[in-house]
Length: 351
Image (cartoon, rainbow, N blue to C red; front, side):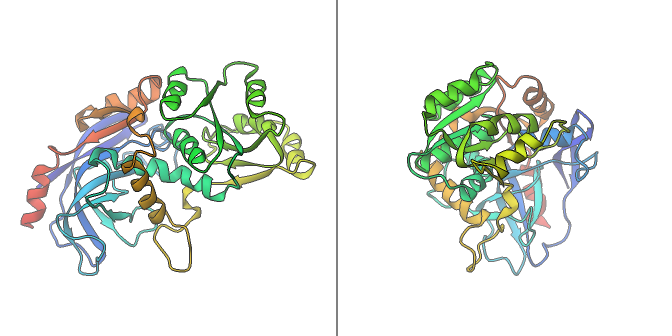
């Protein structure tokens, strides 16, 4: 039996390929799942599709997060059972295996009757990624926070900062993303293509200024520029991963750290915290995921305005092309595997 999977063949070429299904029972800590819905993470996956990520050789199958139905479990697996639905960090494939001990891909969180609608569940990861920025921050009730970049990650960062009690200003060049942020409850948005955008932020924040900058663009030039907005004893949080070379005079940036007002620069990569719950550590990605699922189910985190496309896996090329070239229309792209993985499910059950 074979299963469908999305393959990045070479830079900017996407195809729907096939993979052999496993012919043996899962190992002790493995889980086999039938994919139901998977979500594209635009920043990471487009970087992989460009061929610019050394850790992702081409050809390769991408994948960041999805929700699947458990088909088989190893004899040491206790978190899920056959028939359960689970949030996973699996690939864009009809049927796949998860090693539940793996630090980066081992998430397998059982869903229950109180969980959100299944095709909304994959958005959980795009909210847990910016959750790290909130965890490392010193955001308090009444603070002013500016978020640069209002894609999926930045939008959720803005929503979470608002839930933390902050007054939030979302900044982006895209009118549609600013409008989407407004629909998600972000009261203030600013057009960063306006040369006077920083003045607009200062007018909103008032004399005390912005206490926290969260950058979700990963653009070094934006980080250096926006850091000027941070008030004394404030913080600049790097949520987006800087990838491109940027040449500048760093003395100005260093002086913001060294001299009054002593700006703190903080990294907020999601892997700053352990993946799985640990009795000796308060925060984990697993715990953050459970909280996000509750927030989505309670409509305290808005997802629907970010959910722009549900595509058949055969339309994968269209989805990635849209995310790259038509960012005004493409934001949250879900692949619907519910028909594609049905034959794979039968093959696994029979194995």
